[in-house]
Image (cartoon, rainbow, N blue to C red; front, side, top):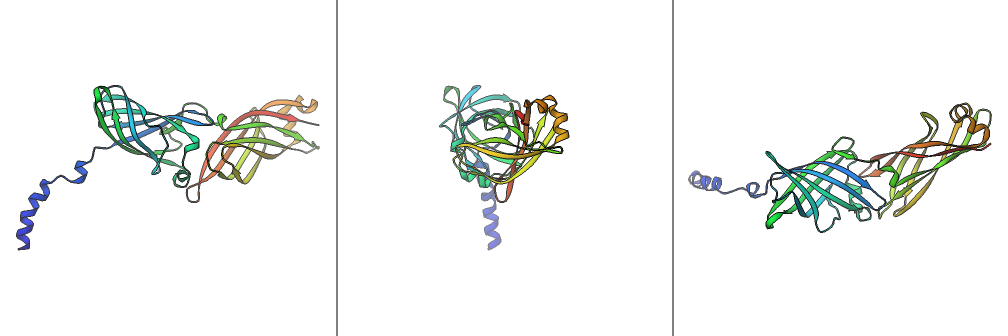
Amino acid sequence: MRRVLLTLLLPLTLALPSRADERAPCGTVDALEVTSLTRTKLTAFLRTSLPEAAAGGRQTFAGEIAVANTPLALGPSLTAMVQPGPGGNSVVFLVDLDLAKIPQALLSRVHPVALDVTVKGTLRGEGGTQAPVCSAGVLKIGTPEVRASAPMGGALAGFSGARFTGMTLTEVQGNATATIYNPLSFPLDVKDLVYSVWVGDRRIAEGERHGLRLHPGRDNAIELPINASSADLLSALGSAVAGGGHVAGRLVARVSVRVGRDQILTVPLDLPGSVEVMR
C-alpha cells in the first residue's frame, strides 16, 4: 500500500514548483569603490551584476543594503546606474553613508579581511517599470574588490608635527602629536599604534603606543614619544639641527582597531607634517 501511495504522489510532487524556483534570481556584489570620505560622510559606488533591471539607464532603488548582516542607515531611495549586457545588467548603486549612523552592532560582526555585502529591494525605472533586486558578495579588503579612488586618511587623521629637545652627543628625545577623529557614535578601542617619523626617504624615529580609546564624535589627540640617534638626525635634517628650525616630514603609522570577536582591523596612515629641532 505504501508503495502505491508513493507512486501516486511522486508525479504530483515533481510538478509542484519548489520554493527556490519561486524566488527572484540573485545577482552578485562585485566591488566597492570609496570616492569620498569626510568627517561626516562616506560616498561610494557599489558595483553589482543583476539578472534583471527596470527600463532606463538611471533608476531608483528602494530597499536594504547590509554589511555583515547589519542593515546600513541609508536614505529612502538611492540612485542606480544601469548598463544592460548580454549576460545580465551591470548596476552601480550610488551610496551616501552618514558615519554617525553606522550601527555599533556592525563593529562586532564585521570581519577585518572581507566585507559580506547583500542588497535586497526594488529597482524602478522609466514608464513605471520595476524589477526585484537580490544580490550578495564577499569583498576582500586589500584587493581591487574594495578600493578608494582618492587618499582617505587626511579627513580623519592629522600629524601636528614632531619636536626634538634635549639633544646629547648620542641621542635626541622628543614627542610627536597625532590626531584621530572618530566620526562614529560609539568609542573605538585601539590595540596598537605603531609609528615612525620620516624626513624625505629616511626614517629618523619610531615607537609604539598600546591600549588607546578613541572617543566618539571628536578629535582624539595622541602623544607619541620619539627618540633618535643624534648622528641620524644630523644626517637627515642638516642645517636645521644646527640652527634650530623646521623641515618637512611625515608620520607613517599602523592603527590596529579591535573589531568582531578578538579580531583586529589594521588601518595604515601616512600623514604630512613638520619636524622641529630645539637646541
